[in-house]
Image (cartoon, rainbow, N blue to C red):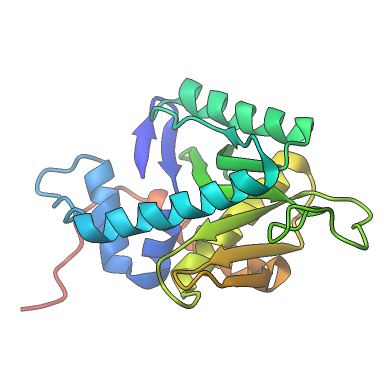
Length: 230
C-alpha cells in the first residue's frame, strides 16, 4: 500500500492483510500514511525469499522452454504515470496474443462510495492464454470458443492457502477489468510442483467482501490501532 499524488494504491497483499488480521491492516495503513510511530514490518526471511524466487524462476524457465519468448513487464515505479505505463504494456501484450506474460501489471480505479480515490495495483507471476496447455505447450483440445488470459501464481506452500487464493481472485478480477472477459479458472503452482486449478466464480464474492472492507478503512482518517494486548 502506498499513496500517489491522486490517492491510495492498494495491492493483493493489502487485501490479504485485511482478510487475515484487521490489526495488521491498520498498521500497514498507518505506515503508508506516514503516521509518527507507525512500525515498519519485519523484512521477509532471506532464505524464504531466495527459495520463493527460485521456485518462480524455475517455472519461468519451464514455460520459456515450452513457448519460447515470453513477454516480461518491467516493475513500475510507485507513481501514477509508471503504473499506467506498465498496465498499458500488459494490455498491449494481451492484445498481441502472446502465449505467456511474466509479471503482468494491473492498475485501475476501484469503484466505491467513499470520497477518497483508491486504485488497485498488482503484478501476477504469469498470465497464460486459456487455449494453451502449460503442461505441454500445445493448443488445448477442444479449444475454448473464446480464449482469454488466466492468472497463474507460484507459492512455496504445498497447498493453496486463503491468502494465495484471494490474491489469485484479485488478479482474475483485474483481468476482467482490463479485457472485459472473466477468466474461468485461476491456477496456483505450489512448492511440490503441483498445479491447483480453481474456479474463479467461487471466490469472486469473498474478494468483493474483503475489498469493500479495505475501502471502508481507507475512507476514514488513518490512525494507529489500539494494542490488543497488555
